[in-house]
Amino acid sequence: MDKRPSLPWPSIILCITACVALLAGGLSLWLVLAVSLVWLGSIWLIVAQPDAAPQPLQETSFTSERMGELVEYSGSPILVIEHSRVTVANRAARRLLGKHLIGQDLRMALRHPAAIKLMDKKKSGFTQIRGLVRRRDLWRINRQVLNQQMSVIEMLNQTSEADIRHAHTDFVANASHELRTPLASIIGYVETLSESGPSVPPEKRKRFLDTILSEANRLQSLVSDLMSLSRIEAEKHEQPEQKTDFGKLVRRAAKEVAGIDREARLQFDINGSVYINGDERQLEQLVRNLVDNALKYGDSGSDVTVALSLNDALEATLSVTDRGEGIAPEHLPHLTRRFYRTDPGRSRASGGTGLGLAIVKHIVERHRGRLDISSEQGQGTIFTVRIPALEA
Ligand code: ADP
Image 1 (cartoon, protein in one colour):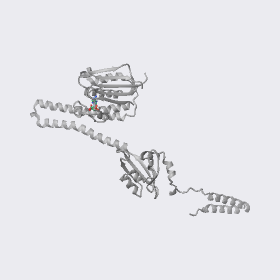
Image 2 (cartoon, protein in one colour):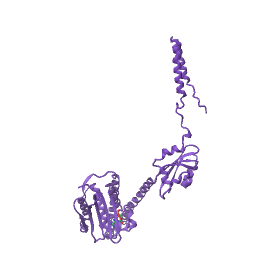
Image 3 (cartoon, helix red, strand yellow):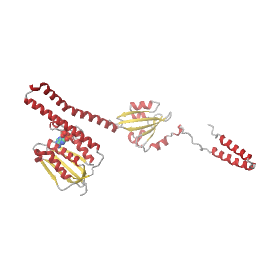
Image 4 (tube, protein in one colour):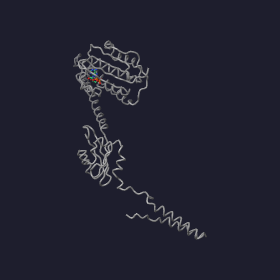
């Protein structure tokens, strides 16, 4: 390639015209020659500078080393591929796919038909791969072709987005099912009553009306729990700031939910005052849900102990203990999932919505606390909530 600089003709013509004008104006020939010499000399110096003008980015400027340095600390796995072989794998990529990756054929390293198809194409593109490292993970693989030999691969982990989408669809399906069941029952009984009218014997009519009422109540509880859940979720990043006497609140809410019939079964073990920053309405709901469950699922003649204390880590520690059948270990990790029940029939018969513990979990999280469940079959269950306390 000819590297000689091209002459700046417009500047030269301007210089000559200016000199002629100076001569015509009566300036001495020597002075005009000296000016033109300085002018043309400086133009030449600028033009002759090798790096005077910026060179356009050449394909050859994509070197593996330079790209490796650029992408090393990126949070996403990034690879540089030359003729299908991995020449650069940044830190995130090495952590994901192993150090041995460098030098390997990427199609072998990923071992996935979609990845092979993407690499065999001549153009840039992307694909999604499920189960790349773990069975359920989902990755988007972007391939940017740089030139005939080189391409850059960027890997984006989309597992959590996919999980959220999946949980959302599941939730809508479950909620619709929960709402449809009582509605179908109400519609069925109302139709029978309206079609058969006076021919339905009074005691049967009473039974139908009682069922309609209890199903309607179930619908109301469901809608109210769904609304609570969505309100708590919407506020989950706002930390509550109301100074609350937790002991007083626990006593009040527990007695309220037990009602006159079940109050005698409550045993309190609350000494002194424990203050926390809290949202009183939500904390009352948390206590109500835990105590109601303990009374519902504990043996009907047995006590439920509600204890509150301050532990060494300055946490208000609330525990609700029942003496009931307990919960089998395999159910424990799932209890706080929406609509999860160990015994759906029993839960529904006692007016349960399957949302109580999901609500408890969200309230505890909003208060920066922890929820622990321990249970022994045949003995009973202890739900423990720990929430950071305020200094007395
Ligand atoms: P539900 O409205 O069905 O009570 P929850 O979310 O409050 O819904 O509880 C979920 C499930 O956890 C219940 O259906 C029940 O199977 C189980 N459970 C909750 N609390 C207890 C308890 N104290 N003892 C035994 N099982 C319990």
